[in-house]
Image (tube, rainbow, N blue to C red):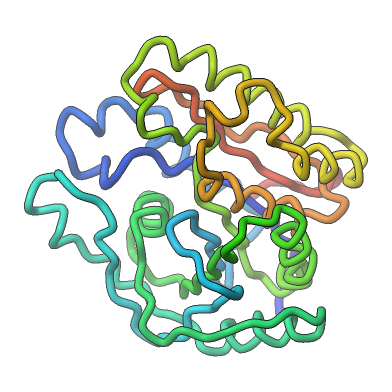
Length: 273
């Protein structure tokens, strides 16, 4: 048990296995630098990390339970060596059981998956943040149907993990339209939508914040930024887990002709390490 209340994070994880691809890695220099520095900015080393990734959805919320998770190479068209990457962090059956306990206590159906491995939304940011791969990692899926209220609610259910030293990390993108990447006309679209998200995230009243996120599809350029909201829903979970914590921009990168923002939610009196 930790005496430190952890912040919660939403990370825009970039495109594919970019840290290992020459010519692509350079485009994400801001993201790489920020992620490498991030552990030193936390109030304590996490006891474990719970990742909500935009690359895993199931009928019900599902938790990975493997002690030794494998890899999910959920991308195509990249160099052969990127299909041999390994991130050998251990799993945590104890954390997986605790997540299931919290969700069931909140009246939510939850399932377990002993085979799920690390997708690139998970291993890309974590390989930069914790390259020694010693911190245990558990994954929590999205729920099919993409109901934003359900994802905020699941975040609210897992908020107690913050008091237990667990770093809750949502991994997605503030812009995810595959047809829009590498098109200069997408920059103002991505910026307009991120302005809406940032306005929501930084609201001091969590009820107003969550209401604005619930109605994300009414934002300017919403469906141009997210034709399918799988990469946005991890932010909903993080906002739920934020509770009364205040959100702020963690960093903003501009890559592939779009804005990609990341956010941190922390208590006003929290001090960085």
